[in-house]
Length: 638
Image (tube, rainbow, N blue to C red):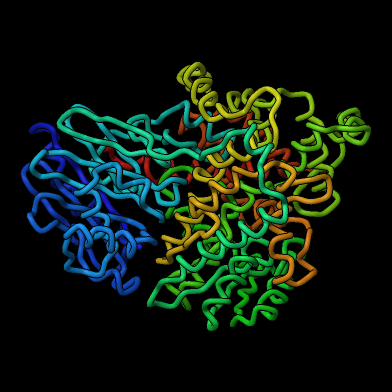
């Protein structure tokens, strides 16, 4: 568990910014609370923070140099196949002085340069400095499990694990209005863009080569999906189940290597239950963790988590939370977020990570399965539209009824009406427009109308259309579910789900490993036909069938529950003053000069009405942005 940062100065102006490397490294304290080290020479500064001991491999300090003091690495992540790679290098005469995967990565790069990347099985972001050639090499893992932000201009190149570190270099804080427009629709900002026009996120599966005033980006990995080949897979369903079981168990085993306390998240859903079950086969003393909602039985899944824990014989801890327990952590979360990010389930992940960290340093999670194997409600909805019958047509015909009926996520009936309304609206749209609408909470016009006219004029709609087109590039006019899943892997997974887990776990000094995102598992998943993943009666079909015999029968084909939090109740209770008197007050909004207060007032009226729909998610997005703005944009710029 680490945080990295660095700067490469191209001239005397850039060179001046090296003075910030210590503060930029200190800003990553949560990612590595115990040790900090930096390297500085005439043109370069590198910083690294880490936990004291993650496992026996972490015995070498960073920045780490090779034997000849030519190459230097700062590395954040884990290489799970480092032992095999080390053996290959030793067979070629390469010597090692530590037991660390960091040294293996450095020496593999020295031998093979960018060709080392496809050989790595793990999650990572890293920078290697070649002092002789005066170059940086920066890379990010295949699926974006670990973050990497960067800035490149005529004076310098800066990179860091988090935005708060980048900001320590005194950069210009230029709001990207097109990113803001996207954020108002999705509640997060897709890579490669950020809230600042001059800062970018390195895309998953990509690397950068930086020399003096020159940058080159390339892609080293993409999911090997061929629609026709997948639909005509030579594997029978039974054979596919067996291969999937083999690959996932091997992935879990790789991620159990640790000499510190290691546990597993166990929500009561199918994905984390499978990961925990496989882990318990190879780690008899496995500790599992889940959170429950004492005041929100509709969202509570701890009963199922306990059933699983009992069957697989783990030491199980349930953190049973009241609404007040959740609410007391909101300010800490808002303070940690350094770029607007408003997935409200981050609150639950934050608390789960905080409580788990009291017992374990590393935790396994079930993230990634929904995006690969069709686990979300929207996947069932896409399948229904693709093969719609009289029921779907009836739902579409009753669109005007769904609009007037009360909708909310807070109860079973009102949530079903909300889903029917979204389904009815989506039926009318093209494949790409439907995907975009179901990915977010506000339409394009709604988001645009949230902005002041002069701010609206700064939104580059052509640029937004280009960004959106790139995100939706894998969606044909007549999509199948695998096309949807591939798009989820490029958008939802890295920019929402993995960002959430990384931010909230790192805020609490916890490393989270994700077995479903072993690249061998992912490659296999996208070689399978849609019918192996979803049919009219079941989502994640192969996942559930492959492991049906190791889990309690009660889990089989039960509806998915997310990490929901009671935002609507908070907004109408404890957080009302924050909305009415502070962040969304007419005074604050008018002085800020970004949003049209009339549009915000309309959202507030809906929030306190009998038909709130999804408005609480939009309000949460605004609160997150306003808190961020107050913290990062009202300070004196360097």
